[in-house]
Amino acid sequence: MSPYRKHIVIVGSARSGTSWFSELIALQHRYRMLFEPEHEFNTKHGKLICDRYLTVNNSSDNINAYLKKVFANRVDCDWIAQISNRKWKRHLWPFVPKKYIIKFVRCNLSAHYLATHFKIPVVYITRNPYEVIASQQRVKFPWLYDLSWFQSQEDLCDLLLENYDFDIKKQNKISNLEKLCIRWCIENSIPFLQNDRTAAFEIYKYEEFKNNMNFFLEFCKLHNLKPLDDIETTFTNPSSKTHPKSNIITGESKALILAKDDYQIINKYLDIFEINLYDRKTSV
Image (cartoon, rainbow, N blue to C red; front, side, top):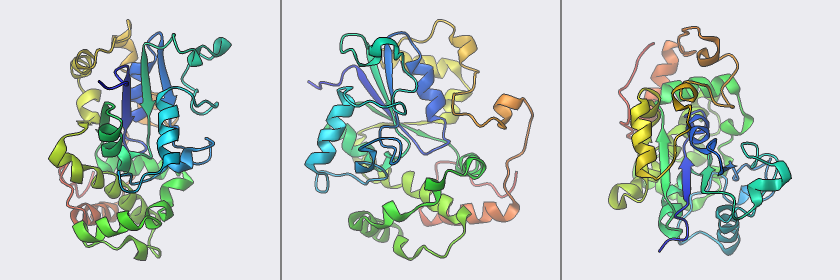
């Protein structure tokens, strides 16, 4: 029997709604959220698993030891514990949490490994690439444009060549938009190569949850999660990571910040990586 019956892992690309979704679950009393323990700068050992394509063949004792500590709630810092009740360090008391929610945005490529090796429930959140990339352009996190983590992994490079005839090592003189496209496509294609055969983790679209509270409530029921008492109100609130200029906060109806040529570039990479999760768009 899996030792992680009280756990749920949430993965997805940055700006895909993982914060909104995980907070909606983790704000419940006595639920403990570990926020992005893979962060390469804000966590001590996060770089061990950051943007890593993990398999049974390329993992290591250090990586597995760190993941076990994460799942055992034995890693802590201001970043990881930012959505936690830290009074008297209650978030670390082993008898307090009824549920553990571990939220990642740079562990997509490890989703299959986490689910199969650790026998831990993994939920994969996708969001349409046009919305995601437009949001990523707005926040401009520097790491979003850094493909070196991917380029340094020979097995991942070989996998991209074999499946998509795509040589990531040659992708250096490209625009920032192209870097975002490549990152999103890698994060939303490679994990599914294995999952199609084994169904190791669950895949949901952010839009399925955001547009239907009952769908979210059914998810909670399926995973034995207790919704917040004020879920009707909380459900429509922005997450703590929502950009202050987002129309979710301002209430304004704004078009995506994408030019017509941007759509063409995004679609080019969606075609290369054979991604058909969403219908293609050519304009707003």
